[in-house]
Image (tube, rainbow, N blue to C red; front, side, top):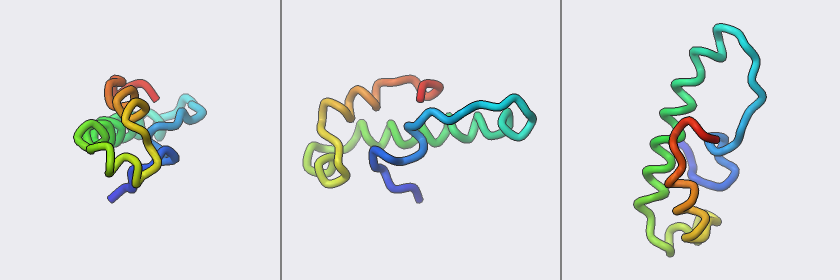
Length: 69
């Protein structure tokens, strides 16, 4: 289980290198972002404050497509 915080690695752009290992990792990163953004979208303001997000920031993040960091 991944903790949803602003520092969760799913929301951070990482440096990209072109090799087979990173190509295989990309779908995993996308899936992780998708799940975390869906969870953010379902949280109420009280839960969001508990994890360090405000409602506006969470809605902006949740609205991003999974392929954008």
